[in-house]
Image 1 (tube, one colour):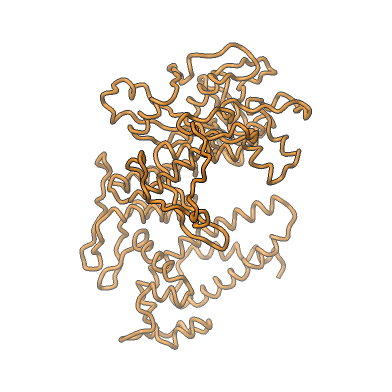
Image 2: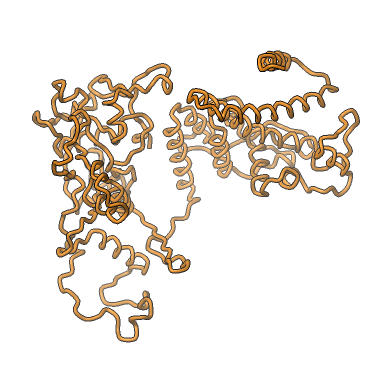
Length: 563
């Protein structure tokens, strides 16, 4: 049979499968399915050898579609196993199924007493070769999303019917995300008693009186995957916190274990210290800062690395970078700041910190208290010391170190009445929400700058016309955009650049109204023509390529504001 004849035969088979088949044709259908699986393996292997990128892309797309279909069918098959009592099959039938020699013209034989498998989960684990936890997860997912089983063996609709409809009917939605949502919501419900003859409908409510399932369905309708995941995760986390189902671990620095000559430490932070750690990590990862380059010195030391250290204020339309020119670093992330007063050592120690006999003893007793310790745990004291070391810069040391930066955004109405401290909350530049205590402390310790927005969401205060954006302009642009404006981008604040919407070389001015936040990759994509930026109502919008957005609808990134 030629390849063309095979394609014609498969097309005819596809059409014929739309009708009903007699019971006697079941064995033939299984043979066809097995042949199709073997054919799929052969076709996939043949296509994977092609050097045409279009074939590779199409092949990958088909495989992903098949994978999602398989995920759904895995759960559907569990219900079929459970409703037919497959775990009760006799030895001869199980052996025939395993070898593919089953005679489907005769009835199945099932044990009336004790069988080889306790239940469907046990059968799926042992007969199908699944991990026991995976088998039980599939059974539970099947009850949540496909059907529940009554005591008489009959099935009834699943508990979360709306999520179940999404799971089975939405081909474009990743079924794993729906299943995770169903598991989380089921944990908020009382134990179902359908097997006892009393099926329970979902009753868990949101603070607005709406069912949690309804909220989850609405969030899953979000078209952008990153935003959909962020919305769903935030929603579930908020519900767990409201029900006090999460136990916050103690903050501090803990020696967890020792492996060979390596110590493994566990670090737990909260409040504004979370932002300090994220700022420290992000700045260390940033190759355009002095500290970021210094952190990479021992890794590569290659002079080519410095090409990546262009000033983040420099748009890509400035032309090629002169490699002989001095490298600039952004003042927003400058690590030359002096150490904070509390981290300075006013009286340098001249005596050894450990007494004789303690030098080789590892650690001094960490629980020993000295005057001035206050009510601070050992782990918290170690954490404070670590943060102080990150901020401390030895004057005699010329190496660049990171100075963590904390910038928070507070709405004006939260500052209107400082007597009502419950409303005094803020959001850091890394998207962390801070409560009243941490926000109030940072207000007292830090500088305050104001960005006022007009009705079109544009900052009203703009700078004078010049080539580079000033620090005030950057703050205003970031306060408006919250991050890279390309839909779905999650680049941290340290990796942002500031782009002229109307290019400087085309006569565009340097102002917050004409500026937008872009990560380095998307900044270059704009100037390379891979993305299209347009201005609508004074705000910059991005149009993605047609293969990502066939409708070509300009959009802004919402992932920074969904929470």
